[in-house]
Length: 185
Image 1: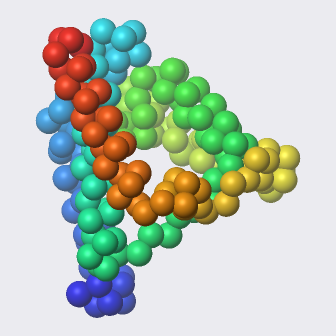
Image 2: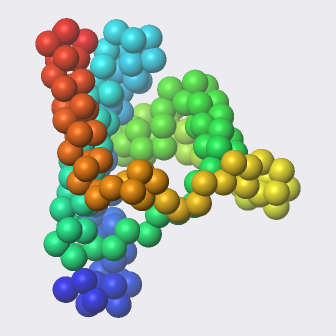
């Protein structure tokens, strides 16, 4: 099935679109497309966003590595570095602080008909992407390649099997989620 899917670009696009709709639906059902919930997270009194995102991290991490262990997928990590992370975090943080949405929640909020997400968010993403693309050649050498650490994953850096990292990290996240829930946050 994997080979057939890899060769069928239309099916890939359809599955991507279907997954995007499901993702947006679940974001909306989790209330993380609501400005007041996002603001509550930023002000540290409503941890709905953290709970949704950490649950997704655990599910995705276990799912991806289970599929990998079964030989159904191969990982293709992208190179990383401190320059990329710092600039990406700065751009993301600026947009998030300005409007109170991240790219995923903007898409969900636009789907719900929120005009602030459509006018400010979609416009901001489009203009920001254009500015980044225009500045990319200069940014690449000056900032983006600084502190490059390549394509190594954490298990590769630690020279251990993947599950030796996945299981303890998943357990820590689950414990954190349980603590957040018990605390009433």
